[in-house]
Length: 439
Image: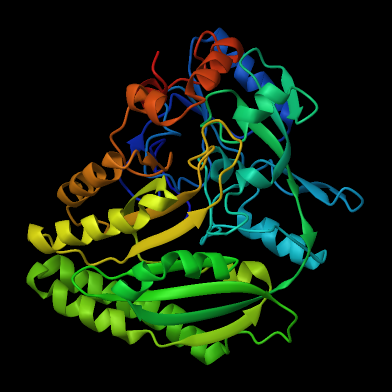
């Protein structure tokens, strides 16, 4: 299946396959004016409006039974300002297209997540991030935003223009308006040297602060039912470029990480008792490797094995305890977990509902193969994450509501007050926003 969401006969389904909805109508505007007109028309017809990107959220954040706005015609680079070192891009542009276009211009984002199928507006609106000592989230690299608000007007915001909107709308959950363009800070394209290396979990946890401090981008994957991890360190390099060879790349990334991994998932789903053995084999299959390439070829990788995911940001100092508790829970539970747990970090930022808002953060992501029951595992994991005042990724499975968010986000009230001002009649409301933001 391709990594964009699909629908048959007016039904829309997300990539994870866990959200299905039938909107009253779908609109694919070819310009900002057409989008604004569609918003005004929906308000007249008494219908709610949601924009939907590539459907990579596992939550129903983009679902609506009203008007579904598809931004696939609102794509491409609007403007490159080499003096200010910014690029303005249409909201429906897939990250992959942006990354390739920037590289062609000799430019790059500073940091990115590990996949690039999402649209720029979908990724930023849900707080998508990579891992980094100084930089992590895509939203924190935004310098200006354009959005269509509930009355159909086009609003631009930046640190200087409508700064209170800018403080919130970079991670706006689709609640403040429909983002039509984003301006990102960019820099001259650079090289990253990646070092991937297996390491025992106890050592990673014992040296976590050092590994995080000594590397610009550090992350690791822990394989449940084992004491094994695979670590990845990305640091800037003077070169020369040493990309992964085609054959080695195919073997590691396609055959092992996607092909064999997919087969292992199918076996594990059919025979749960085999999972611990599979985990031990999987966790030792990937050997150490180093390579040097331009950023998007190092940060991102193909994800062809379909899964469902929950991810929480915990305070960085709580990471080691959180992971030890997660391991103890899995060991004790009788659960069979066939997917590695991903751990990344982010510095504090100044965005109201960013998962790293005013707090140095560590991210712990748990996954299950699509079609495998995930509720018991996710419920137990969520209990651990919330005990550490964790903040869930807005686009991934969680059960939290507005009361909880008011406690873990110091600027939650600032966001909801702005929403009251920009969308008093809740044109952009849906069931998910009703739960996470309250009425």
